[in-house]
Image (cartoon, rainbow, N blue to C red; front, side, top):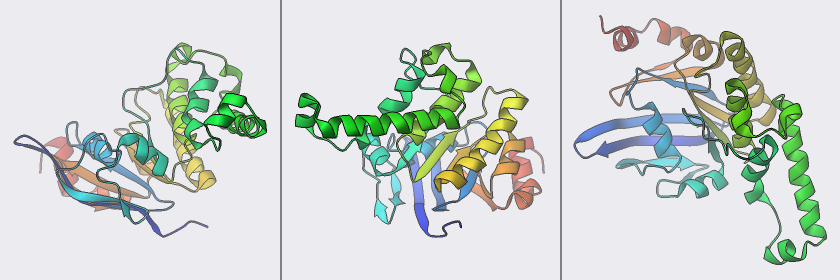
Length: 257
């Protein structure tokens, strides 16, 4: 059963760079198991929205609420610990580490032992390390990367690197997962597999997923609601079927009435 309580909300967030308004009064509300997309032409402000939510940018105005608490002035590492994880438009893996270590490191901040345990390698240390190892192996299995666990991340094919980045984000055990163009660079077969995977991940982990994507087929198939931005402003939001025929959306993409 899907949870209908609100987990993440942006309240009229605005981002100014000098005289340029990159995002203007953007509002969105995610319930705990929502699967929502943000679309818009290149330069519309989509990634800037993600950067504000994850603490890379501090909004010039407005607020961001996670679990009924403001995270507006929090650092990215703290926001990750509070329950928001993301992937990037340009893949940012630890390319010289193994597939296994990319995922294991992401989950390390959740380890429940202190400095003395790590120094003396006591029973609690070994127990927690074993738990993290098992969780890492489980994610490798889910993302069909088990046989590649000892590969260096940089040696994986592009589609597998994308999957690894999502697996690494999930290793933080997020409440909200932000996917920034997850299908970028994928072939049609990989995109179809990703479409099925995104929906399955939401259901299995019971998390909210917010994604930016240019592949309209993926967006229309997987997203339950869509928000459209253009020149930093939200011009439409609603069900996929409503967005497809919206005149403002068509004009934003095609430049015609």
